[in-house]
Image 1 (cartoon, one colour):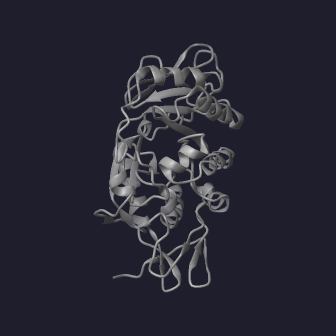
Image 2: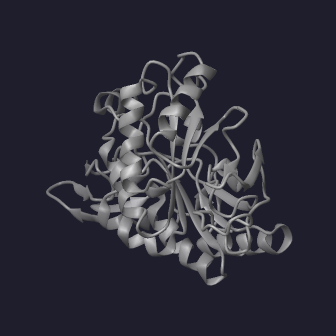
Length: 333
C-alpha cells in the first residue's frame, strides 16, 4: 500500500502526536486516529487516511449547498470523502461522516481537470468540498484549491466550521465562498447532540466573512434550537457580523440516531420572522414555503426567482446590481 500523505498542523509529543487542526487538539496515540477518524498516528507521524479518496461526486445546483448569493443558477462539481470532527446524532450523511465506505481515487490534478471538463461542457463554476466535513480533508483541499484557481474556477466549502483560526487563515486565500452550519447557540445542545464546541463555528464565520463570501445555515430542530431566545441569539450575532449575511433556515427530518419528528411549518415561519428582525436576507429550505426563497431588492424588485433548487436571476445586471433601482446587492454573478 502506498504511503499515506503526511498531515499538516501537528507536532510530536511524548508518546503521542498533537493535532492542531481543529478545536479538539487531539493527543493521538500510536496507530490511533483523532476524533475525526481520518488523521492517524503512524510511527510517530500524523498521516491522512482520506487524502485523494472520494466517496461522493456529483454536479449539483449551487443552491443545494445552499448558497443563494454566489452565482445563483450555476452548477458546481461537488466532492466529498469520509469522516467528521463532530458526531451529530441527526447527521443526514452519517454513512460517510461517521465511518469508512467505498472510495475512489481522485488526485488534486484530476479533480481540477474534471472541474474544467464540466466547466466546458456544463458551465461548471468550480469545486465544492462537501457531503462530509471538508476541513478534516485539509491537505487535499489545500493542494486542490490552487489548481482550481489556476483554471479560473471557484472553490467552495460547506462546513461545520470546526477549524482553528491559523489553518483557516492559511486556506482562505484559495476559498471563494463558504456555507457554515450554526447548529445551536446553546453550548449544552452542541455538546449533547454534536459532541463539540459551538463557539468555533461562529469564530470561523467571523474570520472568513472578511476574506470570502459567507452564508450560514441553521437546521431547525424542534425542542432544541427553535425557541425565540435561541434564534434571537443566533441571528443577532449574525447581524453583528454583517446584517446582509444570507441565512438559511433548514427543515430538519429524522435521520441517523435522532427520531424527533420533522420541523413543523409554523416553527419554520416563526424562525423566519425572528431572523428577519436582524438580517436582510433570510431563506427557508428543505421545504417549499411561498415567500421564503426568492431574493428581493430593498426597492421591492425581485432579483432572483427560485423553485426548489432551480434559480433564475431576473432582476440583476452583470455587476450584481438591481436593474430596477441600480442598488448594489450582496449577490455575486
